Image 1 (cartoon, rainbow, N blue to C red):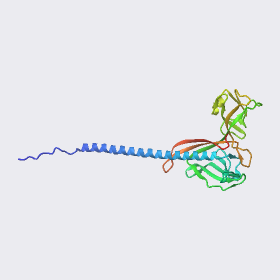
Image 2: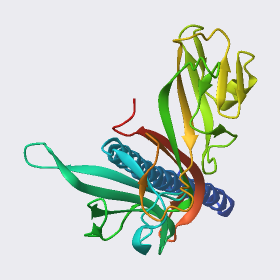
Image 3: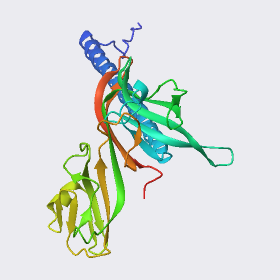
Image 4: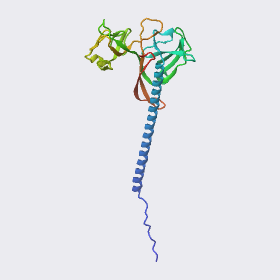
Length: 288
């Protein structure tokens, strides 16, 4: 008599199916979490890269425009067009040249960077126009150079060499020294001093004010060891305010600094993901 042999292979119990299913579900969920995290990281990296590229583009363009300029325009708004520099706007005066590289008399391009707004909030815009020393023409359509701006500040200054004044027994500044990088009309704010004879380099206002070798009184700077013929390299901020002048003037400045606080955004809704500060300083053609 033949007996039927029972198979050694048997099916999974209900408990085993539940356990294995739970494990597989956990693995799938973890996989989705990792994938979503990777997508978010990649998205943030892409947005940060785009923001950094926009910032770099602004810096390069702004620096190039300043370096091609021969002056910063101050004065009251010209012909009601707002063509005048202040804390939220800078107007640069760029000479024009003919095909042979010769400067054209009384022919300039004015380049303006200013805080404005668009559908995404505050932004920095750039516009240009022609200027012959009296009249403005050919005002361009403004273009946005950087978006998602919280605020911006333009500061104006001069780098120069001061010569020791024997009559004053010190070095004379063009105006009374005051704290702050935005001095009022007729005043300056000394921000750096370099003296070769004492190998002294004071490159911040705090260092200047705390140095026992330096004494500042109104517009006179006294430095220990200075004698007739001594020179000192100095930099100071100047005011863009030109009091009651109704015509545009060239500010006594040869460098411009822009400080912009920017918002980092992500997603189609422009959700805030952080903030950054952009600072750059550029010298004009007339810088010594």
